[in-house]
Amino acid sequence: MGIEVTPHYTVPGLAAQDAGSVIELLQQRLHALNDLHLTLKHVHWNVVGPHFIAVHEMLDPQVDRVRDMADDVAERMAALGGVAYGTPGVLVEQRTWKDYSVGRADAIAHLGALNLVYTGLLEDLRALIKTVAEIDPVTEDLLIEQLRDLEQFQWFVRAHLETASGNLTTAGATTEIEAARQSVQ
Ligand SMILES: [Fe+2]
Image (cartoon, rainbow, N blue to C red; front, side):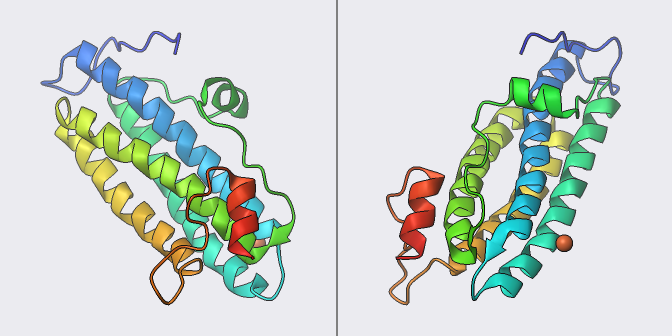
């Protein structure tokens, strides 16, 4: 990432270098969570159509919880002796994914796209938890709790895309635009 993250001090009993590794990994989580709560608000503002109010109102509790998650991750980074970068410029420079690509659209179309956003984020988080478990169980614990809530949020999204036979209307879609289109067909 190009930023020196090995702290001068950290929590007792943890090697500074290990703390540095956790801080670096958490920085990507912080970016992912900051990106997510902004994207959720963007969807909250730009949904239209018959399902407007249900989707509009479903998203605000997710925004609030994801903002809290970002706060917890940033404060864990600080407790480990690191710096938590939360500015938009650093986020855009360091993130490894593209900006959310749907503007004003039908509420269900946004949920199709949002489902893909959650899938990418949750795959990364599960992999990260495995890596962190080897180094710092306290951070692992924090991330497991967040994963549980985020998986529930994705279920709220997916339930709108599910057919009675248990399939997703967006199955096979690999881009947000594709998923948005498929979900309203
Ligand atoms: Fe609002």
